Length: 313
Image (tube, one colour):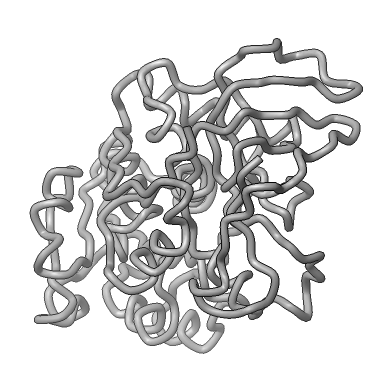
């Protein structure tokens, strides 16, 4: 089978497509998926660049990507809740026990797999798992908003941000977001009420009295976010861990690091939202499997809107 793999750490140029990669064997609780599409997340690039070497030991060659959609072709021992031919989507990165998603066949954990949204194409479904679940869990579990609350979402044109804007609006929030000037129309179409061009203005100078911030950027952006909060407000960060105690004390605010747990329940929840048209998937660009290297170069250098998808079938 074909699989996009890397044999050493580095930039996108280390990715090669092996045309004779072995079809992965299944362990207990796994499913063999005929992959139709995969999508790119920042964690893929971080892992491939070698920044997680001290935490994760890879066996090369390593198949890149984790998000996938496709059809069930074989069931491993202990799997009884899927049938051959079922259309599914999920998360199968090598760092979570999967075989990697950018390949014609994938070994995926059944507990990280769910039925594909009926209203989504395979490419759209592949764009959902990590970014969609991250956005929903951060808002639902940490921000816990009520209608009319004011929420700022950083990086609103990215994968997590684009889903977070839509979900916060679905819950009745007033939503502001930070994007580049070229991404303003995109953010407006997602439903954002207030759009700040972060290249031209400082968000803390134009926003105030917000209940919550969802931070997908970290660093200085994270620290400046405290300035726009009401007393008792919260900064939920996908990046900053541990939270900044000094800023919390100075501004009378809370801050938490939001980790993501991709499981069948969370995947089924976002599938339900898509089928209800509460959340739409925006695929900024698709690349064929043979162009996986170019897909990652585009993702890492060109500031895409929405998600970047690798089309396998």
